[in-house]
Image (cartoon, helix red, strand yellow):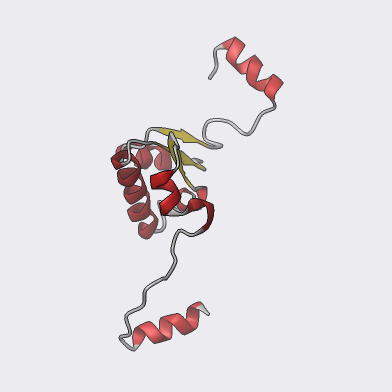
Length: 117
C-alpha cells in the first residue's frame, strides 16, 4: 500500500490523510476531556534522532499540549540524545529505559526509600 501511495504522490497528486486522530487519541477528546497531561507515544520518540519527521511531530505535540495548558510527557526515552532533544523542545516530563526498566510496586517503594529516584 505504501509503495502505491508513493507512486501516486510521484504523479503530483496531493493527498490528505482523512480522520486523523480518531479513537481515544482524538484531538476532540484532547480539547474536551479534563486531562492534566498528554503523552507523546514512544513510537515518535524511539526513532526521533533518525527520522526528522518525528521531531516535527514531537515539537507540534509539545506546543499543542502547552497551548491547551497540559503537561507533556514523552515516553520511550532510551538515550541521552533523545532526552536532550525532548528537553530542548520544552517537554515537561520523560520516562523510559534511559531512567529505569519497569519495576514492581515493591521495587519502586525501595527506590523511593533509598532516594534513588
